[in-house]
Image (tube, rainbow, N blue to C red):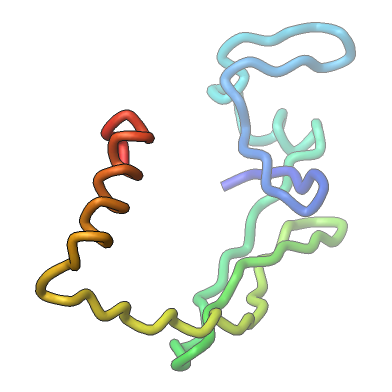
Length: 109
């Protein structure tokens, strides 16, 4: 797969592309050699590291003269929010409050 790295994000070959002021339809169907001559590079994909509890991996991309290389950055997941205990029954005041919130939001709560 050929890509360009623009502002640290991957750009994939589009269907329509402008080169030197000329718009080309079906650009994605052209030969790979043409794409390479316009600066598109092969993407070297890698497998993410194994899962670790409390962490996740985000893809990051760098490029050299010949290719765009995927690597992985580890980041910490936010602490899970504790479960909220909901009583089996609401008091009359709590029930009135909830009804008021529901009706005040036009029934969209």
